[in-house]
Image (cartoon, rainbow, N blue to C red; front, side):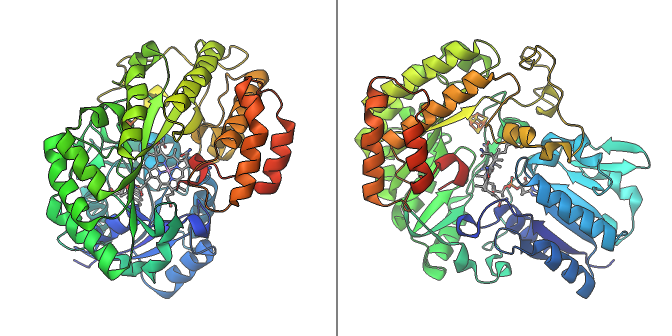
Length: 503
Ligand code: B12
Ligand code: SF4
C-alpha cells in the first residue's frame, strides 16, 4: 500500500486583499495527511494557480488533484484549471468537492474533466477515495460514502455519509500556506483579523439554503479544548487580534455554547459571526455577559422577509417581530446586526419587495447601526435539496418573466453565463422584470449611500458623510428612482458592499 499524495487547489474567487484562510483545504489537508500527504495551492493569493498546479504535477508525484468549487464566480477558474490538468496530464484523476458538486452533482459529473465528486464533508470520503486510487482498487469505490463517480457512461451516487466532527488533536496545517500571516486582514474588527470555523453545519432546514442542502439539518460543535487550541494558536503564534467565524450558524443550544463562549471571553478577540434572531433573543443574561466579554462586534442574521407567511413557506422558523426585537437587543448589547433580506420572490414579487423596503426603514429607526444586505431570492432547484428534504414543501414551479419554466444549467460551462453567475450570487432571477430589477438597485443605492457600512475602511470619512447627506432627501421622501447623482458620486468613491466582499 502506497501513501497517496494529493494536490489541493482553491481556484481564485476573490482579491488578494480579501483572501482568508482556505479553510476547506486546510481541513481536508489535515485529514488526508493521516493516511498520506497533501499540498495546497490557493488561487486567492497565487494568481498563476493554473500554471503552478501544472508545474507541481510536472515536478512531483500526485495521485489526484482535488478542487474546491463554489457556484458563482469560482466556476470559470475551476473549469479552466480542470481543463488544463486534463489536457496536460490526461491520466490524473480530478476530484471536485464543496458546495457546487454537492448541490449540482450530476451537472459537475457531466463535464469530461470531472472524474469524482464528493458530496458534503470531505474529511472522511476524500482520504478513502485517495487510498482506493493509489491502491488502484476500483472495487472499493462503491463503498465510499458521499462519493459520486462514473462507471463507464453511468454516474453512480453512493449513499450519503454520516455527519462528523472529529478532533484532529492538532491545529490546522496553516504552515502549508507559506506564511499564514498574509491571510490576516485589516477589517473593522481589528488590524489582523483571522477566519475560523468552529462548529460545522446547521440544525435548521430553510428550503432556499445551500447549508441545509449540504448538511440536512445537522450541526456539530467543537470541544472547548479544540477551540481554545486553535484560537490560542491564531492569537499567540500568528498575532491575530480578531476573528471572523465562518460557522454556518454560530449560536446553537445555549448549554452547549457556554463552554465555547467562556473560551472566547478568556481570549477577548473581537468577533463576527452568522446567527439567528431567535437564538440571540433566547440567550440568558449570563450568556450575554460572556458574549459582551468576548467582544462580539457584529452578527449576520438572515432576516429574509417581513412576511410571516413567506418565512413559514421557506421553513425559516423565525418571525418578523423577532427581527425587529433582535435589532433592539443588539443595540442594547453593543452588537451591530447585519440583517440580510431576500427580495423579488417569484410570487407577489413587487408587493413583497416594497414591503421589505418599508420593513428595512423600520429596522433603521429601531437601530440605525443595523447593516442591511439585500439579495434577490434565488431558491435552489428541488433536485439540489438534501435527500431528506426533497419533495417536502416543494415550492411552486419556477417560471421566468415570460411565464416559461426556469431550466437550470446542465453543465458547469452553462453556470458561467452571467445570468447564472448572478443567480448563484443572489443578484438576479429570471422572473424579475427590468422595472423591478431597477427599483431594487435604486433602493440599494440610496440605502447604502444614506447608511454606509461600518465595514468600509477604505472610503474616506468625509466622502461617506457627503454621500450620506446627498442621499438623505431621497431616503426621507422615498424618492429612490434613478439616483443618478449618487451613482455618479459612488463611481468616484466606490463604497464597499458588505455582501460582495465579506468583511
Ligand atoms: C469563505 C466564504 C466565501 C469566500 C471564498 C472562499 C474561498 N473558496 O476562497 C468569499 C467571501 C469570496 C465567498 C464568496 C461567495 N460565496 Co461564499 N462562503 C464562504 C463561507 C463563509 C465559508 C466557507 C468555508 O471556508 N467553510 C469552512 C470549510 C471547512 O467548509 P467548506 O468550505 O464547506 O468545505 C468542506 C466541504 O464543502 C468539502 N469540500 C470543500 N472543498 C472541497 C474540495 C474537495 C476536493 C473535496 C473532496 C471536498 C471539499 O470538504 C470541506 C471540509 O469538510 C461559506 C459559509 C460557510 N460557513 O461555510 C459561504 C458560502 C459557501 N458561500 C456561498 C455563496 C453563495 C457565495 C457567493 C457565490 C454568493 C454570495 N452572495 O455570497 C459569493 C461570491 C460573491 C462574489 N460576487 O464574489 C454559499 C454557498 C451556498 C450555495 N448555494 O452554493 C455559502 C454556504 C454561504 C451561504 N450560507 O449562503 N464565500
Ligand atoms: S438557519 Fe441559516 S444556515 Fe441554517 S438552514 Fe437556515 S438559512 Fe441556512
